[in-house]
Length: 412
Image (cartoon, rainbow, N blue to C red):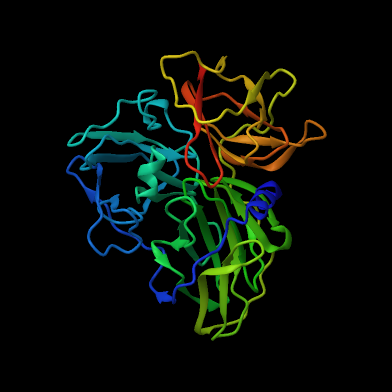
């Protein structure tokens, strides 16, 4: 993750939010409407006047962010998207290893949903973790079409509270970082609690470097997949656009303490605050054990993998009728060498799969999985098992800028 911190430091992207604090209960949740057939109804429509978090006026169910969705691993998620916008739209379920027809890429995996029409998304998430849903088109998600999806583990994981913090800055270059739709909210906590903070960067192009002051956050999962627990170096955590991280944090301070969640590299600014209420008591806790694993391969056959050199291009729309970047048989490993000749850091998102980031000096890999990463000047190598059949997108876009490129590969 250090490459993301370095890229953002060079570009001085983060200025945070300077508005007065407001108090509300987090996570900020709206309950989605449920139809008689069990589908949760999401309506993509203009946001209501005065909607908290509103930027340019769109939202799911007229709210920004949209309703927080929650389901258990293996349980069927059924969502009917009703398009009440003046243009076509779709939902992309960011980071989910779901059936190809549900991935939400217009013309590649489904037809665009026309104004006045609807589309049923129906699948069983195979992985417990923290995910993001948003309009596939970046311009639409920047206007407010995004929300959080939590896939719960089958059993409790040893925390007192589970809090989703959905972070977004709207259009590229925007300074303010909103948390669950609000500027610098206060999060009430009590001494002795162990919190699970699910951090989601819902920005389409802006990277975030975060630090929780006066606490020791354990990184438990990245991009929805459990990691070997570790304490972030210097207490900082980098999140690419679309990236997620699950932190376990013990509340160890005295009542009345205020601890900010900071964004930035050199000029850190508070984007939210932990505010200790009265009550609670000090507790001594052991280091948290790893989260239960998801059904991902224990090893990847790098020697027998399909090796592909992938140079990132400038702005280039997807061509569903064109040839795939590569075709691979289901179950075979793929190693991608991603080169970035553009001169600008690029955000790369792999659809339908999770990958390992390979070490630069050998064929070892980092002790975590990703689906989104920032590629700077150096070539990055990733590996994954192509175990999900269909046509899958590999999307890239310059960090903190509009535009982007997309190609696709086929798993047969």
